Image (cartoon, rainbow, N blue to C red; front, side):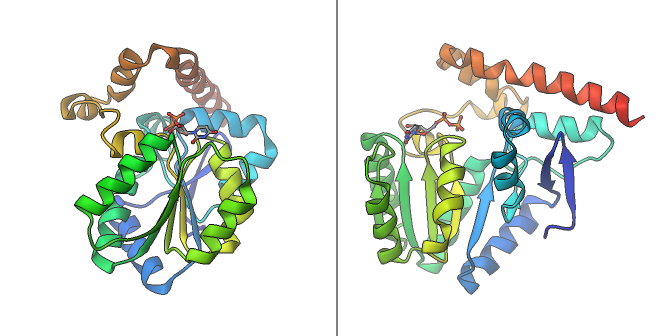
Amino acid sequence: MHKNRIDILGTEFDNFTEKQFHQSLDDDLDLKANKFIVTPNPEIVLSARKDANFSQIINNADYVIPDGIGIIKGAQSLGTPIHERITGFDTLQYLMRAANRKQSKVYLLGSKPEVIQASADKIKKDFPQIDLVGFHDGYFKDEAEIVNEIAEKKPNIVFVALGSPKQELFINKYRNNADAIWIGVGGSFDVFSGTKKRAPKIMQTLNLEWLYRLAKEPTRFGRMLAIPKYMNMINKEKKQRK
Ligand code: UDP
């Protein structure tokens, strides 16, 4: 899997189709493999450039998935195109379906107490074959207690929604406590639980999801400045490579 990676400003992305990725996840679940999925967007690519430790954690993950159209555009612009965008949220949904099919054990960690409760309720309602072995919000004090619980419950999938880089640091530190698929899912439970709405399909298709998010949460403006900054760096890199 590590062979076919595409370097975008120092972050090395897998280059496969979503279908191939899903097939691979099915195999991992069947084999009870220990895997770590990261889903970097331009903001994460930029923060990895500033933090060698974080960068190493990302690049050493088993799957580095291009979340965000900025990654696809960047790859294209650098002359090393990536097959397709694969979002963290779609990956979460695929894993839920796969877990339901395989009656897998799932643990949820992160986001606000009411959001994680609503996510657990949704799983019980919409994915009744999933064995939900536990869940906890992301505002805990005692890390060891959570880790012990995860180790005890032996989940097949652990979803970690603590935002970046917190979730990646957490998974990197504790993944050996359970042979599971570990994935950092950022704010995905906010959407999965129905607490926040995802952009309408038409905006998703037009790659305007970012605009929808900005309209809903204007405080994201500062974070979104990462995108033009990232595009700028891509252009510089392109010139250097010529
Ligand atoms: N969060 C958490 N604990 C923390 C900090 C954040 O559980 O200490 C959660 C927060 O409630 C939210 C998610 O982490 O659900 C981060 O969401 P954000 O929108 O920043 O993530 P993105 O999807 O943009 O990476």
